[in-house]
Structures are given as C-alpha cells and as structure tokens.
Image (cartoon, rainbow, N blue to C red; front, side, top):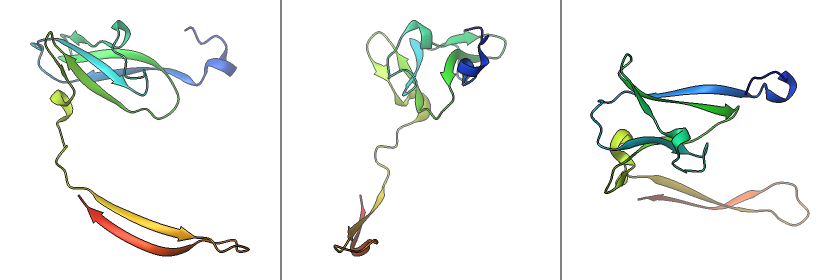
Length: 118
C-alpha cells in the first residue's frame, strides 16, 4: 500500500511485532489473533532477525484494538502457551448483578447479587 490517498488510507499502519527468544526454535512461529482470524499463513509467520536476536513480522493493520498471541507450530503439535505461559488454573472472581425495571420507570433497581470464586 503506498498511502497516496490519505483520506481513505490514513487509518492503516505497518506494525512491527517482535519476540525475544532463542534462534534454535524447532518449528515455525506465527502471529495469530483477531487481526487475522487466527489463521496461520506465510504472511504472519515470524522470521529470525540475527542482528536484533528477535523473531519478527510486519503487519499492515487498520487503527483499532487487536488481540494476538505467538504460536509455535512444529511437525507434531501446535503450542499456544510456549511464549506467554498458561494460566488455566488461575482463580477467577465473578460478580453477578440482577436488575429489574418496574413498568413506567426510567431506572433499574438491583434486586440480587451473587459473588462466585472459581
């Protein structure tokens, strides 16, 4: 994209993603998430930068908020938690509020509350 038309292309930017990890990774590293519908392709595969000692990819993104993670794909499996860790057993706290709006009023009333820890 050459960004010649600023009124329609100014919301896009080339974004560098870099990951510090050793160069002797057995497999391919991909950037996946909402920014590419979690699809692993050659466009979002990271390459190793020997000067910076980082894995990198450049992505053209529209301004916004994106979720993403680095995924290691080897011959026998795909590892999601290799770089960011796993928090599957983390305790979470949830608060549930029950609201009711009486007919003819313009406000809600809290009529129930429950807190759950799992």
